[in-house]
Length: 336
Ligand SMILES: *[C@@H]1O[C@H](CO)[C@@H](O)[C@H](O)[C@H]1NC(C)=O
Ligand SMILES: *[C@@H]1O[C@H](CO)[C@@H](O)[C@H](O)[C@H]1NC(C)=O
Ligand SMILES: *[C@@H]1O[C@H](CO)[C@@H](O)[C@H](O)[C@H]1NC(C)=O
Ligand SMILES: *[C@@H]1O[C@H](CO)[C@@H](O)[C@H](O)[C@H]1NC(C)=O
Ligand SMILES: *[C@@H]1O[C@H](CO)[C@@H](O)[C@H](O)[C@H]1NC(C)=O
Ligand SMILES: *[C@@H]1O[C@H](CO)[C@@H](O)[C@H](O)[C@H]1NC(C)=O
Ligand SMILES: *[C@@H]1O[C@H](CO)[C@@H](O)[C@H](O)[C@H]1NC(C)=O
Ligand SMILES: *[C@@H]1O[C@H](CO)[C@@H](O)[C@H](O)[C@H]1NC(C)=O
Ligand SMILES: *[C@@H]1O[C@H](CO)[C@@H](O)[C@H](O)[C@H]1NC(C)=O
Image (cartoon, rainbow, N blue to C red; front, top):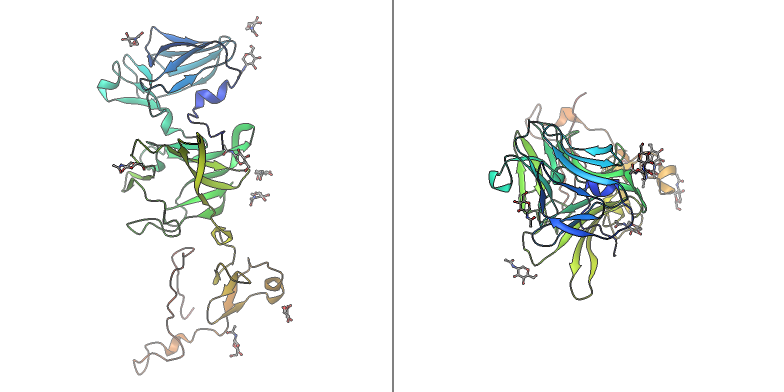
């Protein structure tokens, strides 16, 4: 795995052309400076942000912040929600391209940062989730194909449709998802131990890459492999190695077994009906088409529960199932 882009940024996408002679300038530019073709921004620790091409030019201005020109026409720009005062754009060692207000990092006042706009790659310091106040969404979106960086159909982020959960989406359909946060890890993805999880009225996000500087890792959503994969850099072999992927097995595919079906690996067939349920369509079930799910083999006798004598009927009750990742919080309808 040698094509994990270590610093995939918006600007980087726009002019992906051949590398010409490069001349290091600085880790930052201010209103009076610019980066032109052949020049690079180099962070203090050596992270490089090449702006390649023939007529590319990156400048800052006092109205829209960062502007990338190609032969004098604007091909990309950033907009901050506030009016900048003496902005400075700086490439950080993390790979984050930050536009600071008030002359630089010492102001600790960020006008814009590339880490708020993830592409297909997630690096240390980035978040996944949503800022509920300003609508900003930290979501990974796959490339269209291996050599086309425009937005693909696969994405990874927070889904707020019923209750908050993280999922791989194929367009607007859930493709795979991790179970709810249980306070220690996400159910169904025990190795994903987040560095931080925040959920309040303003923001819902997690940040999952270790803060340990001796471990270099990243996450990529890939439409071609149909996977969300976590990579670690192996110093010895100088390669990226995958140490975890989602879907990790066929049961991670969302809704595979339909309502009241349960997916169990290894088993044949992998989809089974819960106790007391039978396949809705036995014919479809027999051909490994499980999407229609299962139905109750006998309807609930709600009137027997807790009424009359006050003692529940012994034929209806609850069964315990362990180790299952639930699709959505279950609802039990009685008497309707
Ligand atoms: C880099 O840019 C900063 C801010 O504009 C400036 O203060 C500093 O002198 C520059 N350093 C070099 C080596 O050009
Ligand atoms: C940049 O400009 C050149 C020539 O003006 C053009 O051929 C090229 O397609 C442009 N690139 C982008 C990314 O707009
Ligand atoms: C840049 O744009 C000018 C004016 O539109 C045009 O004349 C020139 O050929 C362009 N340069 C390149 C390298 O395409
Ligand atoms: C992406 O989604 C569009 C619209 O739903 C669809 O036409 C296209 O085939 C999809 N591409 C892939 C690779 O699934
Ligand atoms: C993604 O969705 C498109 C249509 O929306 C479908 O054609 C395609 O097969 C789906 N891809 C996967 C991997 O499920
Ligand atoms: C950081 O990772 C290295 C290599 O895996 C390990 O030896 C070290 O103990 C870790 N440090 C911390 C603070 O966890
Ligand atoms: C995506 O997956 C394809 C097929 O497995 C692979 O060739 C490609 O290198 C992957 N791209 C990234 C950025 O991981
Ligand atoms: C469904 O109910 C019938 C009749 O009570 C019983 O014979 C059958 O075994 C049940 N099937 C399942 C899948 O529970
Ligand atoms: C399902 O398959 C089993 C064994 O292959 C067969 O006995 C049964 O008749 C099939 N049922 C339906 C409804 O097709």
